[in-house]
Amino acid sequence: MNLRQRTAVSILALFALTLSACGGSQQAPNTQQPPASGGQQQQEPQKTEEPKEIVVYTSHQADIHEPLFKAFEDATGIKVTPVYAATGELFQRMKAEASNPLGDVIFGGGAETHEANKDLLQPYVPKEVDKLAPGTVAKDNTWTGFTALPIVIMYNTNMLTPDEAPKGFADLTDPKWAGKIAMPDAAKSGSAYTTVVTVLHAMGRDDGKGWEVMADIAANSKILGSSSQGPKGTNDGEYAIALTHEEGAFKYVAAGGPIAIVYPEEGTSNVPDAVAIIKGAKHPENAKIFVDFMVSQQMQEYVAKELNRRPVRTDVAPPAGLEEVSKIKFLDYDMEWAATQREQVLDKWKDIVVQ
Image 1 (cartoon, one colour):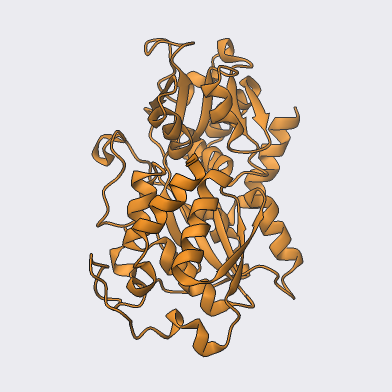
Image 2 (image 1 turned 30 degrees about the horizontal axis):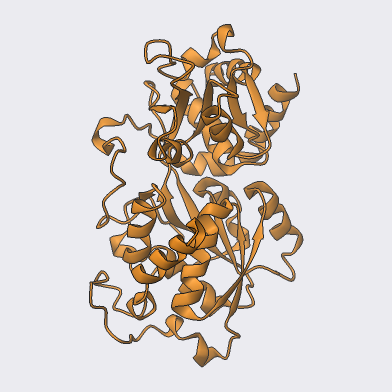
């Protein structure tokens, strides 16, 4: 039995009862013995005569989305048609399709990217919203967090010792790191946009100092097309350092790679990646089931244990080996600013990258 088969079997075992769990009361979390059925209308797409299918736009890599989509299909009988692209490209596609949406759900990308495009999203209150951590659901319910993703610095331990490794964003401006840092393009990657705004918040958002630091970091960096290239290249020894989100780095730590994680001493953000229903979706009831499924207790336990991602549920423990939240310095990250200033931030980013 190969790895993909073993993964599928483990998910099937974990989620055999997930569909019935999705039908429970909004006031109580899922249990080991969920009720056989529930009273939530959104959990019964057959009553709306929707076809048992859904189109999911996703920026998650295949090793993330493939097992999750298979689990959803097996638990619900709803067939998933995935469309994969970078977060920015998916939202551009959604804008072009606004009068006739071809997707039902957008799955992946930082929440502030969703916030900046909320006119393309359909509000929905998750079934177990009371079990989701503060700040992981949009104020207007247009998006729901999937996992929490602090921005971190990762480095290759075969190339740098702990003493040599950078301790924070300011250290990354040193000319000695020229060509040794990997970072994705903020115009394409949701996590890279979060990284840029995190640096601005940490180093001076309104006085220009943050942009000075960001420009120096960009000058030292290889700007890559996707958020997965930097962590992989750092693990492989192509780069000494990468700026990424915690999950992108920790999966290599968990696999035994030569990787260590630094939480910037100036502070970091903890913006979740998000899942949302596309406004005008052709399968809105199936889309609601998809959102509820991805933040269900069973699924959040799976992503913590098997995918090494921080859950957004308060009743699910984080993966073993991750830094405790209490030991991480978090910034007062203004998500509304990050959303409303997105165009201006990306214009400035493009200016410094092409210099």
